[in-house]
Image (cartoon, rainbow, N blue to C red; front, side, top):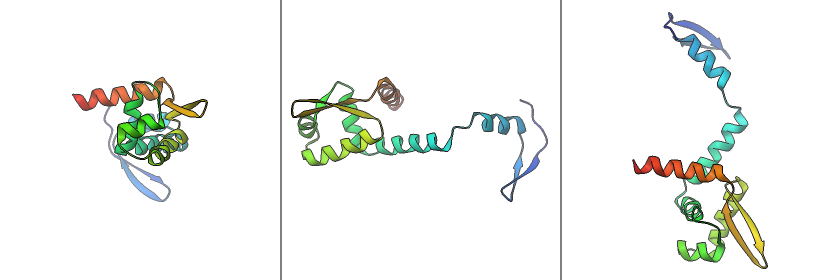
Length: 124
């Protein structure tokens, strides 16, 4: 991608200086939809909470019930359930019922991969 002289573009009444038109055009072609960006931002925001992050990291080892997570986190079952509801709403965890007990697990391999990759990065 070659360097071109700066160009002024106008968008929504705002004049913007652009140096690399090809890069801007590629970024526009590759841009992710706003709805997808919002969902991704919400997932990262949820994982930015230490309690929720501890929950999903614990679930990397396999499914756990609210009682187990409560003991692990040293929080009330109500507090843990609240956090799990948020994670479930965002599609990060899922549950299954066995009698009266709900077991929680990471939703799919994408969540597992995201957490594993993030942990690898943090450990570098």
